[in-house]
Length: 492
Image 1 (cartoon, rainbow, N blue to C red):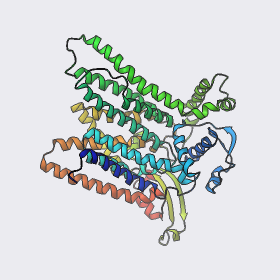
Image 2: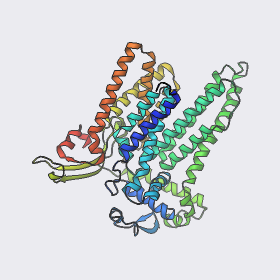
Image 3: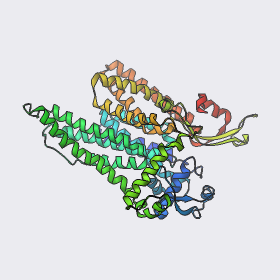
Image 4: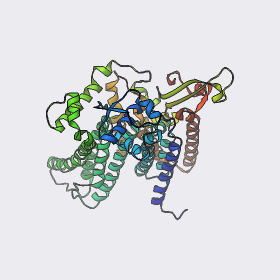
């Protein structure tokens, strides 16, 4: 075992954790074999896109026919207005293409992407900390988080959004490492960099899944330009006699221009490409939604404006939902979302005692020890950034801000705590960065204590995942057992 290269362990460990995530998520993922929560939109849209290239209006009773195994008589001929872009639905359609229109088919893509997110996060944290065990810890914490677990078992969009954002950030961190090594020996400009281009692809898919991917894209663009400018300015190879203003102006052009192309332009191309089915059928959309007589791209723009008005206009502002929540409480799990509930089932179904009944619930509830410790770690990370000005802490904090703060603008309409699943990998990264800093400064005795504390934390966190597992998977349990897991009134 000692003869195994550290780089090999750097892959074997994260892959092992990702396989664990896949197995836990894929088990019985096809049950219940009916559309849950917003699956009623995305799974049906995906199937329609797979069949004819665009999302059509569903016929009355389509959900029931799908649950009964029917795949015909589900849609009319008219296109439907969609609330979100096409990228995530095309990924759902991949599963439906290979496995059909049933619970397994429309959820398997989420399972695969959820496990891949665990892998990418583990590798990202390993690169940030230089520690394989911290990378594996990050992957394991994501693996045993209830919210990510449930999102990885549903045909909803936020799990896909999370994957693409984490992948994009991982690409940019790899790009920064390669750039730093390059600048040790040369200041030559490198306008086309593979990792940066791949990050643009990932950001394009993030925005093509949900428009909220625009905010981390904007922040990432500023970060990568800032990183490279500072690395070049601090390089011992830089000519100290060069006029400062001229140097900064030239560097901004030579750094900012290629970064804009690699990230924004590439992301735009990828984004538009995911609308190919729509563009091929633009005439029927133009007729249905009165999009004007322009070309297909101008009509696509008008369709986007229609969707934008839907999200920001008066219609949603006047709506309410029993599971809506304020963004400020998301990281402390103030209001979970029950995506499915079967109440008052016969006591014989779960062996409940006299006077009790059975219940089956699937709840988007995060692991408290992951989210609460992550929230505390963000505060510690901010303090460490103020003290050290570490770009790593800065990266985590800015990505969290990009994924969280925009939602405060929309607190006048129904928004939900599971939108924060995209923040979760960066909360976990904050935990691992803080642990890494503490480890580096600790002596031998303190390190032994730290190892014991981390092992205890992991054991309790895994135990909590097991404890909450029945209400994450819709297991039939006594109502009293469900109530024991509802720690706060706001969770009910």
